[in-house]
Image (cartoon, rainbow, N blue to C red; front, side, top):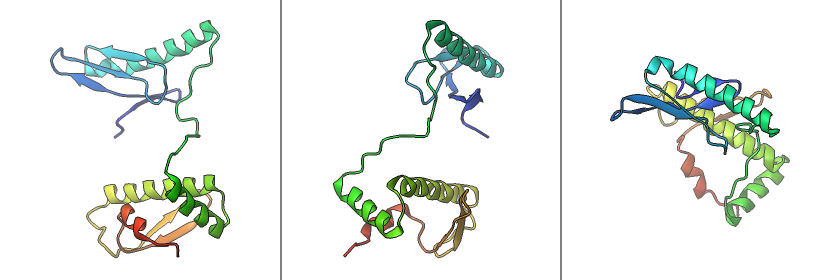
Length: 155
């Protein structure tokens, strides 16, 4: 079950106004504000798709390129100390900063997916194997708490 509607590469939210008894949402992960609403929950998908189509048509009529959600690039501000630690790790691993961040994101999501889908069997010390698209395999065990890595020292 997804928390978002999806159509033509766009994601949309679904919220309920319990006072006025209608459902509404907006396109997610773009700066343009595109919203939609329906009086019946079953019609929110159609309202969302119409809003996406209208957005694309309006952009075309105005000669503007429609914004694409999640283009694949983003800026990350981590502070000088963490930046340096990551740069040292990249140098040791002989990978780019971009590749390091990509792997960290994939690992975090894999851990979240494993914990949320099968949390009853995950115990401290459990060995977890994560496979990435490039067939890289990382194994780790022990505490899966993402924050515990902050205590590592580089010297």
